[in-house]
Figure 1: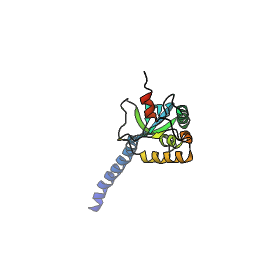
Figure 2: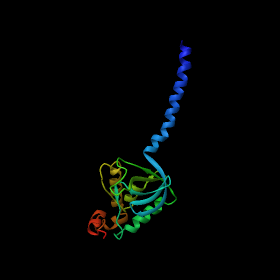
Figure 3: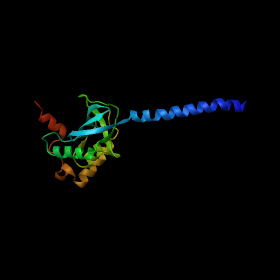
Figure 4: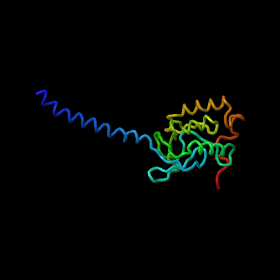
Length: 173
């Protein structure tokens, strides 16, 4: 009887293991995707290609200086250099899109996160936008380091206005 059960059990176990192995990549892919970098639009926005579709990416949890604001060009150039070479990994949080339809993501190149490195370089400030707050504490630590080491705009004590203040006082017409 034991022998007979093992004949039926073994194929069932093998089938279950194969099913689990086949499902693992799909589950991992649900949290992130690989994309091809096209260009930096500004410090905290990118254009990428994913599966033949062009997407505008807004970095989660950081706010870089706006166009014509001090340090805006340096932030854009930093993001361009960081992503240059093409292959990026996008990882997501709870909300995948903002109110403008942009894809919200943490952007990785070779295991390094652009969002965090931009803050660490003193070229962006952390912002908490719920519900996408998974890495907010990392960004705050990166900001402390940038301030302490006087990197980017921290060399002069910070920006004259936060990017949010700049947007409110310099509305596009």
